[in-house]
Length: 238
Image 1 (cartoon, helix red, strand yellow):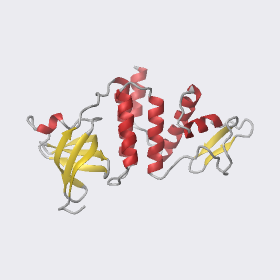
Image 2 (spheres, helix red, strand yellow):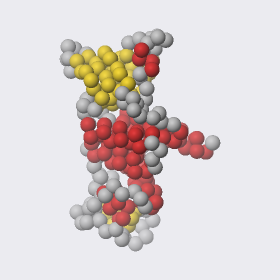
Image 3 (cartoon, helix red, strand yellow):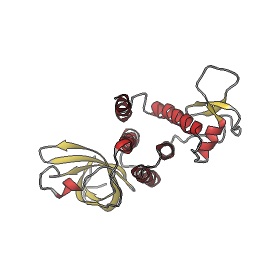
Image 4 (cartoon, helix red, strand yellow):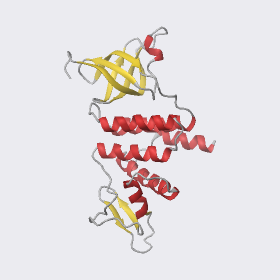
């Protein structure tokens, strides 16, 4: 984007913000057509700034910005309303979604499908829906959008997954059948087929799919732990 180019009326969500100077903020936003964008919100920290009640996490925004370089300048922001605020467990899971986007999604790379999946996940969490389907759908779409799609219906050799067998999932290869007791973590073929069909009604599927996604995400995060998961576990212990 050149210094003279402008973007207006762009659907977006605020992922993170940090202070900049005494009165401003640097925002990390996830926009539908431009992906993650860094924006300088001048004067946003002033007590009477109109932006103070607009720049809210997990709420749909309509943003405009201009400029070149890594950090653009926020020109306008409007709250779109219509979605309850996240609270309790839903709020913690929202932070988890945000951290995945910040850690895995490159800047200024548009992913409209992922944006829509994120918006749907937030709406479901705000409505009190069970988190397993929403999180697994979002995680799968995120990995697929950044080039790491899962193989669920076929094993690493191309054979159809058998719901009666158990499999080990090899990162960047796919599932391989478990022959006897190999003493390695495994999951059922039914879980893989349920995930392919977006069907998370079975409690076993919920548990095994969570373990699989945790394994894959840890790999693509280079083993660096998520702060949101650490906070969630500490609160559960408390």
